Amino acid sequence: MQQYPVAEIMDICVEAGRVMLENGAETYRVEDTLYRIAKSYHLENINVFVVPTALIITVQGNDGLDHTELLRMNDRNTNLEKVSMVNDLSRQLAKKNLPPKKVRDKLTNIKNTPTNFTRLQRNGAMALACGGFTLLFGGSFMEVLPAFIAGGLGHYLYEVVNNWTNVSFFAEMIASFFIGLLAVLFITLGFGQDLNVIIIGSVMSLVPGMAITNSFRDLMAGHLLAGVAVLAKALITAGAIGIGIAIVLAFL
Image (cartoon, rainbow, N blue to C red; front, side, top):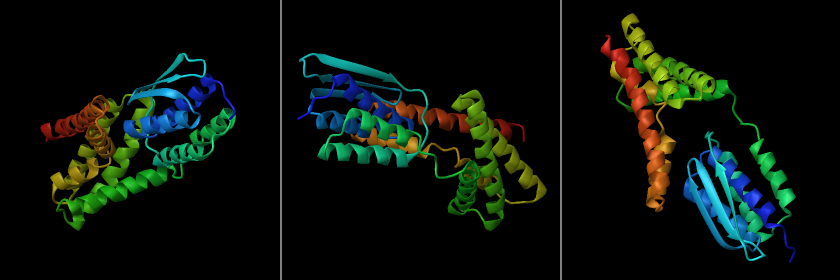
């Protein structure tokens, strides 16, 4: 059995964790994947601690000493395809471990995998979803088009402002404010009858559904710190959306 330097194995564990956290994986899934990768190289006393903004991994090397690496996370997106690809790689390593350099190359390829959808396609899908939500919330077909336009443009504005400022709270508040203005404008011009339904359907493009789901999954898995942290972020997002809409309605 070939022995690889512990530092190289830990590097690929940290890189795998980085890719998963950056693309929306639950913390318990990241911990389990990193444990499996380290275990596949026959390391002992593996301890992995993951929160949404950091991960720590400690293992016992062949020299009998403990080795620790820490990664601080800043960027988080949503691309579950990359999460699945890292999971598949960990399963391959469980069957047959590969040289760390080859694994690192695979992780680099996964990280650099381009998204399957352009910005136009993403915003178009968001717009369609927002239009559909108006029907789900009891609106009529007259509210579908206003919510389609407001939701799509609002999500586009959110992406632009978030890339510019890198402050998601500010971007969400500005986008929801813009959605509220468009909804009021459509009602004033006679496009649609129920302002509330148009607003609710349109802001669904900003609602942190995945964050709320992940937080409860982490909480149910016993990861209380990570679950509470993700839930707090979701509540802050909900607050930003509410503030933006409230500003519009306050001046009606």
